[in-house]
Image 1 (cartoon, rainbow over the protein chains, first blue to last red):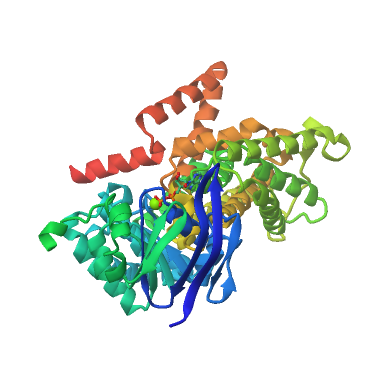
Image 2 (cartoon, each protein chain N blue to C red; image 1 turned 135 degrees about the horizontal axis):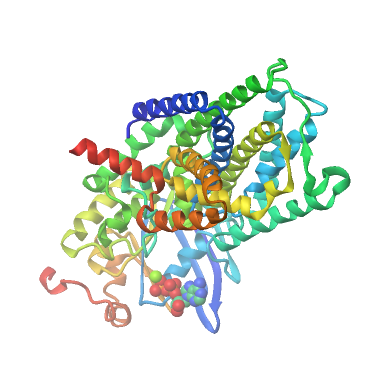
Length: 256
Length: 313
Ligand SMILES: Nc1ncnc2c1ncn2[C@@H]1O[C@H](COP(=O)(O)OP(=O)(O)O)[C@@H](O)[C@H]1O
Ligand SMILES: [Mg+2]
């Protein structure tokens, strides 16, 4: 397996607060890497640096062997890295279908003179995409009329619509009702595996992590405290105490 | 409303305009001016989709009007002057746009205002070239090579204005439904997401800005050739305010709004000026107040609601 994304020595501080304090991480092509850790550990900051939204004060990031630091977010997207957001970022006055179709159109190039003629194709693809996420019944709703779980899914669907090679998801299951959570992640994982997408996801639900992550990185105070397969990390007493103690494993007694 | 309905409605409205101009001859001039302004207002509507209001768009209208006035002595042909002036306005829109699309909301609005006032004072100050507030009177121009009498010229300008209104109306409608138009509306609600879809909000706004300048330029050219006299007042900030006023009066929800608004505005102005010369501004203010309070969809929105109610009954 080859390295797809490689971060070295990333540092960033906000005031005196170190949100990244020497992050070294390799993401392997094809893997699902979970990032866990308490709130404020710097998980979102890592995604923000990787997608060009924040520029680290030191360090380097290479994607597919090329340095991407300093590139504009839109160029990084064009290079193949898409992201979804902890707080869904939807076009609130557009319908869910229009949101998805717009992401598809953006992938194909808004400026293409053919774009106005391909509207129907974009909509058809958007419908297919929403169907895979179980969002088709909501396709005609305005994005601001959705509940949080559906907004979250629509947000991810828009990132998937870009056909990225690497997808970064910030708490994809927060806001999704716990009864639906596993089914939703199951669907998502299937979609990503089918299209051979490498995924990094920030997750608080340890059941989801245990089930879907190939590797787990534990974030704490801007550092990676531990990195390894879920069997090892999720049974590490220090991790259990420091991380899972803060975000208890939901329904773990029932699963046990 | 389906596309066929809209096309039929547009053609019916065009026929009504011609009929009115034929039945009431002095209306021909008023209607031509209204359509010319409607073209500029169509540009305001485009920017409104992105949630941005330009308080300086009369700049592009005035620029094209002066371009026609200056060009008429060298190339006295309407069908060449008009596209040249409109393209000139679009190029100016590109240059100014590269600067103003970096700003949003009040800053966007005020920068447009500021630039239009700079242009206004240039027109006013360089008397040797522009004749200051006296303005420039247009020499006679031909229409498709024909030297027309004033009657035929008036009809030609009205038909030209109608063709432009129909053409640009259809173009803007298609544009708004296209991905570029959808992205334009996305600027209003979540511009940052565009960047994370690999697109640039600024370029999306710039494209709309250039198109809006092109349409304002086409309107300005028609205005100049119809009134045959251009003055710096065309670029004054109240002229820009008038365009925004008409956009709200007509309604920003459809490409019909700007033209409906412009015709209503010009007709009211003519009648109000004749009946209650001093109260014109007050009437204007009251109408705007009523529209904002009771008909935020503008005249077009009101008309649509009435139609829907009748169909339901
Ligand atoms: N743009 C920013 N400006 C200032 N402080 C920030 C910014 N982004 C993140 N922070 C701070 O950095 C710390 C890490 O934030 P974040 O990466 O969002 O944590 P996590 O996602 O792990 O909960 C937090 O204390 C947060 O307040
Ligand atoms: Mg976070």
